[in-house]
Image (cartoon, rainbow, N blue to C red; front, side, top):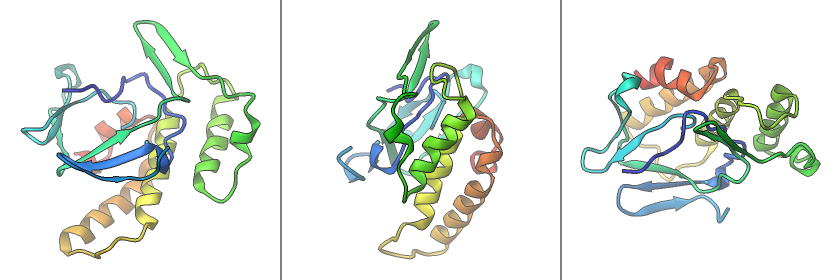
Length: 181
């Protein structure tokens, strides 16, 4: 079993190129050579589900046989046992000047929300990145339109995308978003 993320993690660079999607045994797509979300979970491959610590009172989420891995944490913030590890990007103006993709808007929104103070715990940043990723999933072209199940999944994803920015944190999403109930 492996730990996904600490509940005090803030992801700051969760663009499409930093995510690798794979099935349980073989990598399907690494979306770039360059990788939910503020929750701690363990993967149980035999049961094909995510299990959460008992104190979370959330037994598991079905993973549908797909694994999502973040492959770059370099700009993230992490707090473990009172120690905070964070990358101060307040002086990296190039990061905030990009255009042409929602990714660059997310950097600017994070800076606006945190007042350019990158050491503080700002869990809404994870929500912004989940909004970005759901947008990418909704706008990408797929090889097959799929059947009824795919259409329903797309409707569920659209509902998630429409509502996700109303949540405070990824943990809030996990506990309160209809997609995970």
